[in-house]
Image 1 (cartoon, one colour):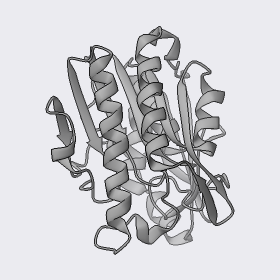
Image 2 (cartoon, rainbow, N blue to C red):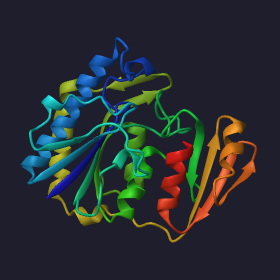
Image 3 (cartoon, rainbow, N blue to C red):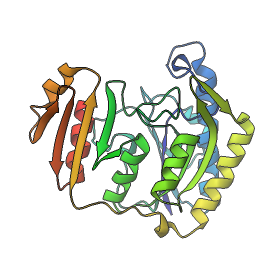
Length: 265
């Protein structure tokens, strides 16, 4: 079994403020340590469940957060950003049997986390066929595009609820809950233990039940915080400006959605 893991930091237990997420800030090291511990637990559990190959994409900010020496020797770690439209799933292809997400967070405009956002702080909201797009949903659709089931997610309660609504067979582990500008968090060791158990459960189940089916047509709307960005990206081939801060793209190929998100957001 070949497993792909994408890891973010805003959904890691204990992480509450932006300066805890930024490389070089004093409070960042503790968040980085816990991010590594939660990813390592997922890797160890995947190996125990029979994974023969594991790829891990460091998907937060600089993509240089995980402490490689603390991951199992079998892991291939993808650091940095190549610019590929798969973004947080860079390196994924249809040879993988499962996708796992660690440390994910509520999307922009959902109210589920003091750190809620989607891809960057440049947008208020992203919608696909009228549905709000979190980073989880972008990845779920990317995995579906490649016919790989997304089987597990850990992070804040908001994103876990969204995953369960999309497909009740996706195993979710909420390690924190956002309340206004605060978070309620599991103890770091408890979070690690629950992720380890959750990944084992997810990979021992019928993975095919976690497949997501893509629609035949896509209408992507990106609502920017600044009207200047909407003006600029309205010139993207096929895009149109539908109000001062929002552009829209219609397509039958999900890769077109990813390409615009990768460039504009």
